Image (tube, rainbow, N blue to C red; front, side, top):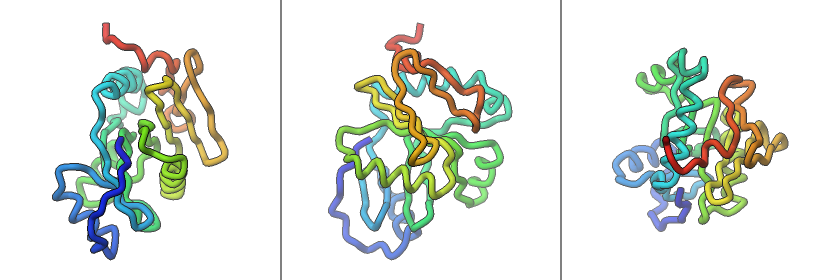
Length: 187
């Protein structure tokens, strides 16, 4: 994810006016604290991580109940903010409600740490997610092959190598050794 500030005119009086503009753009943008941030696309090396996350997710009851991990879904959040997690878990009911114009909040948001994000950027995003009702946020650092698992702003796990990353209690059977999502081949 690229978190570069843009010089787009301040013509947005609300998240609704921002969203109408953003939906017409080729690049994704987030809108938080009255600032627009460019949201880069998934990077090639992150694609394999997403592949492995899905492989583990496909074995869960949540998947059998038609839940999905979906990439780059715009979330309208409290305080008039708009975020786009790299990957998020939605139930089938949430997906159907979105088709009818609602803005569901995922139970799990997954973000890839970007070189351009400051600690304050990460902290603000986490606050937005938890205030909106997200239950778990995984911040994945592909460079260091680590995951920060947040269940709240105070309940944080730093995971690496053979540590088990789990979406418990939301999706109790969605778990894996951290090193497993950083494998470089599919075979």
